[in-house]
Amino acid sequence: MTVTVFSRQERLEHLREQLRGTAKSGRAKSSKGARLLYGVALHGAARQAQGLELTDLEAELVQALGTVLEVDEVGDFGRVYAEEKGGLAAVFPPCLAGREISEGYSKADLESDLPALAGEIAAQANVRVIDLDAAEGAQYPGVRTEEDYTRGAAAHGCGATVVTASAQEQVPNGAATVHATLNLTKFHCNRESNEWSGSDEFFWAACTAADKGAKRAMATRTFGDVDKHETHNFDADTTVFEGPVKGALVVHLECWEKDQGSQATIQRMLNEMTTSLRTTAEKLALLPLGEWQSSEAYSAMAGMLADLAHALIQASADDWVAGHVFTYDRAALNRLSGPEFKVGLFEDPSKQEGSCDLYARISVTEMENRGLTLSPGEHGRLSVRPYLGDPYQQFYAIDQADGSVGFRGMRYGGALQLTPDGQVTLRPYDGNPSQSLRLVPQADGSTGVRSMYKDVALTLDPGSGDLSARPYDGRPAQSFTIVPQVGGPVVISAKYLE
Image (cartoon, rainbow, N blue to C red):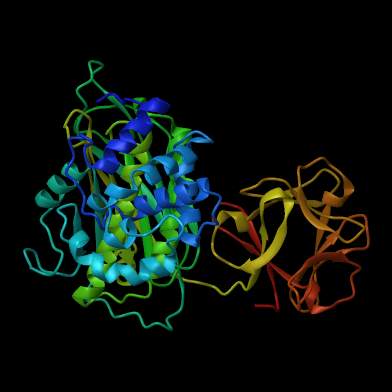
């Protein structure tokens, strides 16, 4: 199947058809409840076009919408939504369709409306619950056969799976956070596309988030010359999630053929979607699986996320790929930890494109308390935050020519520098003396991070949490722990402050 990318005018016409319920996509129509998040994105775009302040949820979703549209096009989408306001009851649930543009829709509104919408979303053929500990053929709320679910996901263009393990010991609310890593291991090609070339080129894209704040978006390398019945291994470091999890991990995965669009555009969209996934994971962590009402809530949130991803893709191009959202509760993570497992079947509904089985491995370990951790941000800002296992909190420690150590931020780049006037910043490496540091073993077993050439040391103010470069005086605020991470980077954590 070749991607048909809409022009700007075509995108607006397509949106108008969607809002009138007349769009012909060849896909099964999702329930009104499943479309809620996409509707909130459009509602927020309309409010933004009118100069109104966005709610927390609207801000996240409008930003995601902006990744698939031109810079000033979000406002056009908002205006079309406002113009079609009278007919929205046929497309979106009453909680949104009946809301005036002047009234925002927040995360609190979503939490309040979810129970009334959960049933209709969970009943869709593209939404299912998997209990890893249930006997083969067992009947439980939300169960679907692999064949029925695959058919349902193909019909809708997206799918949502909630994974739990009923035989695992229930995780109490006060349970310790664990560190989870999800790596893709391999995929098996069941069917090639119908292209004349005779073999396919695949890449995979993912965005993930957990309830403790860690999130990630990534795209794999392209796998060329993929033929039927072949198995291809991912690179050893193909990590789609790494970080702390307490109650829930949400994973959105897609399989693409190389000719199906821009890899950079896809990853940009997924980067924005991680915030919505994190919000979802936070909500899901509060819902213990085991009762049907809770399972419905899990399924509903997963179903809305799958529909949102599909709607964002449709906003800029014709139907072309089916993505899947997988929600793993803590019991499922514990149950899957260790051996390789099959994530699911990724198949184009038209059967014009390839069909692949995807495999992965999850590792769950007890999480060491690393307290407050040096965390670079955008524009050279630095702060200390609780450790989240996210790459933005990790540095590469580099031996430099003058015998010093330089710290380079993994996510934003730049070098850590302690300036004589007391500033601690992250700036592009230019070899200036402020970027030359030394690690000094201290009497309390900690490490001091000091300038190589000036009498200043990295200092954390225990009251404000501010970082500064101050003359060394042996205070606990100048005691740090350098913690090695998998793959070579390090984390710089305060020894005494948590």
